[in-house]
Image (cartoon, rainbow, N blue to C red; front, side, top):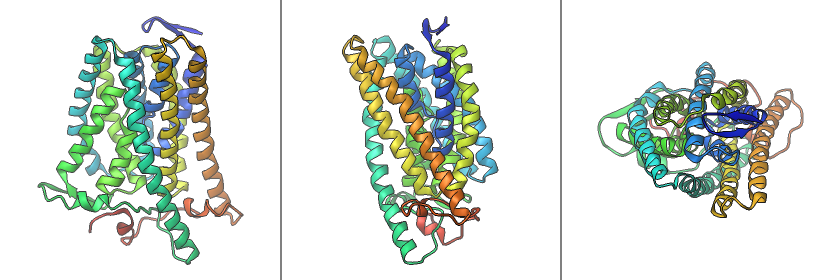
Length: 372
């Protein structure tokens, strides 16, 4: 156990490094900061809710830089889309931090954080899981019919609706192959920024689905572009939380030491899979995090006296990270086997890229809801 003087708590160093490493893998793969998993975990480790938000936001900013560099090398970033969201993101983070300060003064920060986490994450899980299963079935049908599979397949009709909103200025995002109103992009940035500032997260667990299902970007582009936003929102959020005294830099250093390695692994893994595989991992991370947050909420509501709830919450948090890392590793392993002409399960075949990915063809635009 290590005594964190600023936070006034004792917590195991190994668990902080381990959490940073595993969330780095998951975050680099699905384009999220992982705060929706880490912030509740830090609360169970003993950190106050407001301190957990500040520590995780600061750790996210550092990890985001590493992941962004790697995804830029993979060609997964649309800079026009990313920079267009910045203004909305900064405004949203400021509003989110102020909202957290309000609940902190009211002595309700921990309870409100956990309730908001449970409601938002479960709703996103349902939508993402349903749409991804439809996309998976569509890919299996295409494969059985002998059709070539694009790197991205999506079944949602929402992107066409939002791309047809005629509010000027209209932005052409060439890498994402999307034409959409600037106001749609700013709105996405602002809403996710509020969540980032309030929940102490990068906002990626809602921004990635928003970029896919509202803006119409492919999953890979959404992942890389979101990580750019995480650098901005995480950096600004870390500054604001530091001003409010919500950051224990010693805890941040331990988490980043693991996250910087994990983020590299997760980012590289995206080149081995198709879009629906990434969305599957995102949806599973959301439902597992929802269960963990629900246990932590029950622990807090019982006056932190039922220790078995805290134990189960910690076990679930560590277990979900291990499960997601193993899932990602398995997908990469199956992709490597497919590239060497070896057997892989039938359900996995449509999800992995059996050869080095080539640039998306113009025909792929229809699959991701892009405009031309």
